[in-house]
Image 1: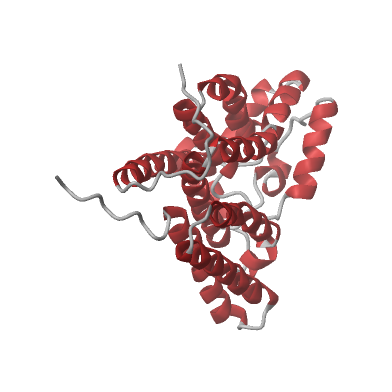
Image 2: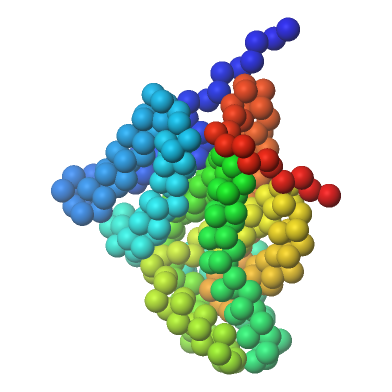
Length: 301
């Protein structure tokens, strides 16, 4: 009988997101020096993760495990809101022209321009609702799977923050604002809608960091969550399937993303789903799926 493999000390997303933080910090050191606010921020984000992980490894209690996992939603938001200034310290200008050339190679006429043929107020309103759904879907998913127990929440975190690691790296390599700003002089049909459209426009205008285009994390994260729900909570999969399809269409229709961004986003979602499946098998083989509660996992029909 083969001995169980040891449970990995570092989780895949810790390697990936930690690698992103370390690489970005080193790039900032070379570009602007160690005392620049962005360089200091990335140093302390990296240090905080190291401390929480080390404490959990030394004594893996339930509280320490959850602190270790919840650290990543927190620093993801910190990194996101400061990404605009950080990325433009590393890359001298935005890369929308390059992404437009990539779209031209893939599709000829950019899909967001082609979509003008089907623009209508009610379609804009519907797809604006789908696009806004991203935020509650992400928050509810984190809360729901944290409630389900440590093993499944750990698995969700592995995939989700691997996506954010590669996505944020993309923001710092190819910062861009998207077609709705970079190509606004080429659009001849305005996107008009109603209350939800206005709300979505407000959220995007005040929520963007100015470089959050390549890859499309709206597509990557929502498709990953949808695939994860299909494996672990079929009722959620059925509930969010159609709105998530609308969300992916909205990224092009609402002119926020290039086709290149969306395709890379789909690739990231597929990579993360594969990674979580492989990691879960390894965790089960090593006996690492021990929970610290009596909550029973949901069974799917």
